[in-house]
Length: 108
Length: 114
Image (cartoon, each protein chain N blue to C red):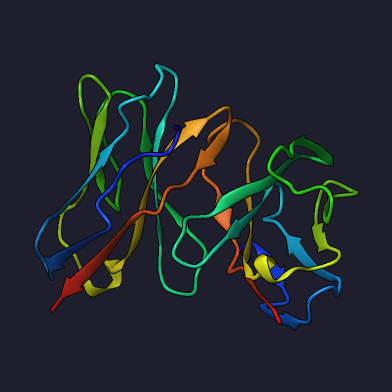
């Protein structure tokens, strides 16, 4: 199955770091890992993506395990605006295959 | 810069009626995607266009769904006839050419079939 495995939901406190895990044990050597998030009543938005090395951008960091069977999205300081469904996606043949994602709640 | 535009935002129809959704991608984006998102699920790809060519329509239910992107810019997705199970949010996304470029999503059209 090309879909990844994520916890259904997670909670975080505002201004604390959040680590969102993802398992992709059957990933092939050329599949990228993408993260998108979806706020209520909006389309998904890109967060970050990577292949083998850890990646950083203004929104988040992506840590990819050495064996590439898992990865973790890191939000360094959660804000209330980060409350969303976060999708860990395995890219396959140029397409993104979404799973159910992790619903992140952020408490003030 | 304008994002991906979709219309209508909401549509309510009775079963067996036809329905069409329109999408205008970000200017210069050659790749266009249509997704369907059922409640509580992630989006599922229906069709992907590179310019005016449908390069992946393997998940499009071709008995009732059709899509076109005649001039390689805007696109229309049609359902005829609609069934109760077609109730969902239909999302359009676009990206620059090349596999795995960042996809930009529109707000979606929420379809309710009664």
